[in-house]
Length: 209
Ligand SMILES: [Ca+2]
Image (cartoon, rainbow, N blue to C red):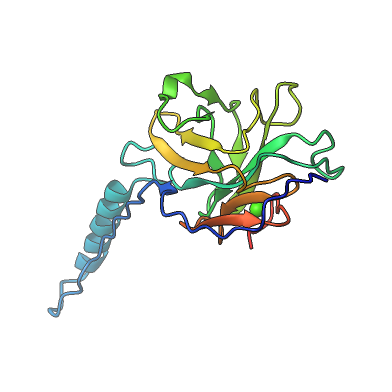
């Protein structure tokens, strides 16, 4: 309905930084000699123990929170009311979990800045989770509408930072005025990718085109 719809833009933005992922692979090379009976089982047990110790469980073994890999996937800064999920027309963002495990975002926090520290960010409620290979809509408004809710609106152009519960940077994006005009959205294309662009039709809780 806005008379000032900006034209569709396709703006590759390498600035959308993503937290690096670290993967540790542990391999065991088979021996060409024939070991005594039972030796192989002991070696296998030892190898499995070493692999478990070096890899940890679900990303937490290296001291991480297990929240690494969650990205800010889509921004809707001037939303239009949608009875199916957003009857008040609240601003919203979509977080994306590209991993095969549910991620608990308890203690993670968001702030509309690229420079303000973790202590100034607004925390997500305890128990906030993003399903495996799935999405979470976070509502931005001052009316307490939607769960989870961040008590803030989104500007036509600004930055957003997602911090993990330990204060580490999970993701950071910024968009310009005109990137996400009313009724449109802006985000990563495809899901979790490093390129961003405007989407003529928002895709809440669904793959980005
Ligand atoms: Ca989407």
